[in-house]
Length: 228
Length: 228
DNA sequence: ATCTCTGGTGATCGCTCGATAAACTGAGCC
DNA sequence: GGCTCAGTTTATCGAGCGATCACCAGAGAT
Image (tube, rainbow over the protein chains, first blue to last red):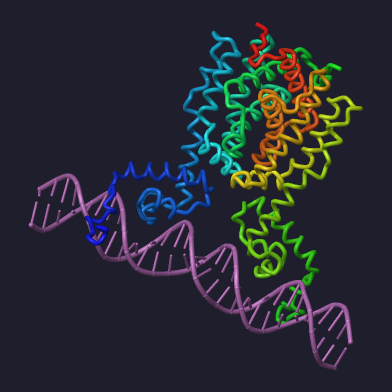
């Protein structure tokens, strides 16, 4: 229809952002793109998402790899902002309440398509930052949880948890993590009530920890007796 | 040195395989390549692994995508060859023994770098075959396990497990699965004794199932009491 | 010995990728 | 107004990608 008269060049969109704004817009949109396409996603597709041309990227990042590193940093540091030290270590509250609340807010932070996909893609690349994150989960979350559990059960506080304890905590943690993978990566139907899933997982973890603590110094435990 | 005289062209390697052999060699090496590089791995790199030239691939597969589909098929069907029906459903043996053995052979089948990486890469692509596999784990493994557990506990056998039961089983299964991810994807240190990890996970799963079964018809359960 | 059939190669096409260099443009300052 | 400088675009490069086609070569049948 009135297409013939060029109405002031419709692509006079919103160009000319400040350098800082443009730069962080690149990182944000790159996170979205790479979450969907993997890190093989193209710089042209990224530019299209911003409504700019592809070479503009190189005004803000020396190479695509530098952009990717920034995406890593942003995504991996995101869940750390919730401040779990005080959540886990506040001994004025029952440990079960602390654990429940911690896992609710922690999974609120990481259970979304964007975070989980970036995490898995970068994990498959075997990057240092992924090793660092896994080590941090071990030291800052699982070890802390075990320490609080030991304290709560009246056991001696040891500097490092035993390998068996740690594995127990990992299986528990992994079970919860896998809930997010099933929901946001596999897009499989899951129990909608995340809080109840956490509550149930906590029940069996804490019961398992108690059982392990009871057979105190034993390295090897007998299997539990099953009804029937 | 004696480089000047062409000594019968050293690349007279081992060419000229039978069509079937060459085809399956393509699939095998493609599985290795894609496991490491992702499905973005190049056809030239693949040919190099076989010691042939790149166009030869297209004598055996119409396109790279068809090759990839064959890789899927091979990888996804691999763990099914262990025949878990008889392992899980043989009621002449104690359920705990059955579960222990099943998870040992199942994880023997899938806990390796090749399988896990292909599985995760294809999972990230959101393919139908991945949905199919997850559904199969649910129907053929978890549902069966829950049915056997119910039978063992003397509970009424219901056609489908409750959502809460299923979630319990998923968290347990996911916890074990994540052990493989930690070991072969993250390459993080894990408890070396896989059988003990399974045994411990089984302990807490079965204890959790019993607890859930005790509070029979209740949809919502009270959290367990913690010492202290 | 020659023919034939098939596994395998060499050359190349069209496309997309990350990256570079030069030209353009518009808001703020004098 | 005209200058300046930073944000943006246009044009393009070289490399690598999947895919195609004509050709080659060697084992087995005749």
